[in-house]
Length: 154
Image (cartoon, rainbow, N blue to C red; front, top):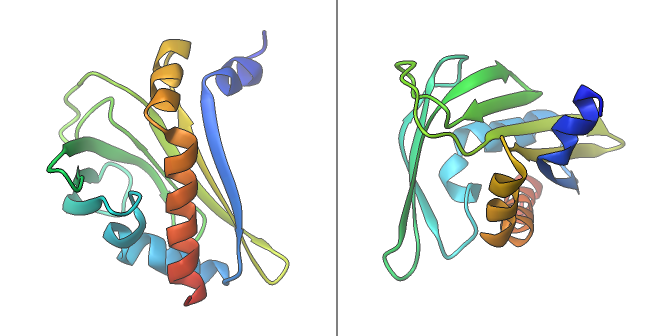
């Protein structure tokens, strides 16, 4: 198996066309993250976020019944207007922690709008299966829909 095939074997993806220009979509993605990051009725509190490679990416998602899911990680890459990548494999002080995934969020011009691609890469098939069981497809599609609604002004 080549590297790309092996990588794709542990990847989940959601892709969506958004009828807004890339600059608007990027602005919403980076400036209004708590409004789209997790499926409603869940909410997101950003605790630390610096839009630069090596910047902290820490947040807490809260569910309607008081559930909490914390995310502690670091941004690996930020290409303004195009892509950001994060991981929970370490924190912003480069301290290792138990890793679950690498998240990649990319946008590119498409016709009169933007193609939004969100990927979750996992270290193993077991982690991928766990993420799928957690509701990856429905959850990340809902997030893409929320991002589209904010960006399209609906």
